Figure 1 (cartoon, rainbow, N blue to C red):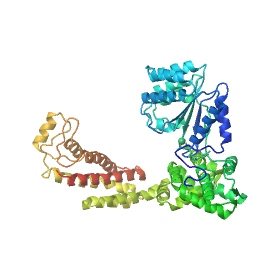
Figure 2: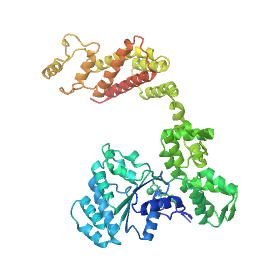
Figure 3: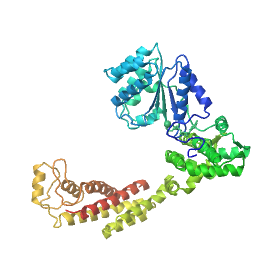
Length: 523
Ligand SMILES: Nc1ncnc2c1ncn2[C@@H]1O[C@H](COP(=O)(O)OP(=O)(O)OP(=O)(O)O)[C@@H](O)[C@H]1O
Ligand SMILES: [Mg+2]
């Protein structure tokens, strides 16, 4: 039995198990005299598509008030602009109308106005004859690229105002969170949906009972049931995979604690990649929260961000009991214990401001090591810098001037070894009305004038690049490093922030790297 009793993410949407409470709420809202538009929210694999397919099935069977059904998966061939969106919607409508409104389907097929006008005309005429339920599944995808504009949403709002169209969207996050296009946010479209989204998350006891009814050959003892909840927190794909494992291992009758543990073990092997995908969708702060709950076994909800707690709760990664987050999902805990520990290390090394200050030097030290053959003096400035931080940011800043001087020496060695600006260059710059040339014919620039020279050599808005090797990127880095050098010389008791010093050090390192690349490059 390759797919098991309960097909998981099969090509065909499997029949819906349980979810009676959600179904009743949705059917009630969609069949009342003035039905709502609904948004369904749930994480990856939560069962949104399964649920919506069941909603459509039941409303089709009821035959009223809906007479046509669109189940449009926007995750496939996602419309890239407003026009494509409306064209696809029109196409989906033609298909949906064929069954009970073939005349309207025909009309729409041959209509040659704008898709919006054609749809609008059909919906207006349909008012007395029927109603279309349009499910926009995978709606996140349509919003992700930010290319659909306010104009489209305003038009959708107009269409949805007609009694002959009801909309149900399904997405992983709320529509408001998903809108990218800043302008699109102001559309009234987003206000047409019922204020409280239908949230699809973990199975409850009734859902589990409904699943067990389809597996009559096994009976879970109370202990086994507790173990199943502890391992999965009721997340559908996990619960169903455990039941699949029990059934396919030939289990009959009472399932012991050992039996269910073996089932969880087998399910873990099958569901691991999906669990991983679900984990990858979580923000890093919610992941840190999971690790905390896993370590401490229980964390007061009031002490953590609501958003992070919700991310974990909707995925069944933790449970809310009283006002504490607890019961870290055991299958996930197992997955994390097997994953390389990078993420844990990131939280430990950089999770707090103190840790960041203490450990950032390690990152920069490694970056210096990556630069390979570096001028010995530059290398010394940089490694000293790493040693100075985080304890003595002031000392590090005073050394930037020396570093900058050395970089200039290397640049002049490569470009202007006799410290004279070619008269041809000066002619060009004068002709182009470049400012700040002063007396460069007689005196080679010093101090901040060196920065200006580098600027001119590497090309400005008025003058082309004349330098043989040094790049514009090096100039830009130098411009900032030089400013830090000045700051370092004139601190005058100003408190030097460690974060600022790290930024300056990083800048110096990348300046050395950029110069290294320039001087190595073929000319
Ligand atoms: N109530 C359920 N009854 C039966 N199977 C379910 C149920 N809920 C989830 N599943 C299982 O989980 C799988 C994923 O469900 P579904 O495709 O509906 O998720 P989704 O919420 O639409 O995810 P996505 O955000 O990726 O579109 C289904 O193929 C099915 O195997
Ligand atoms: Mg789906």
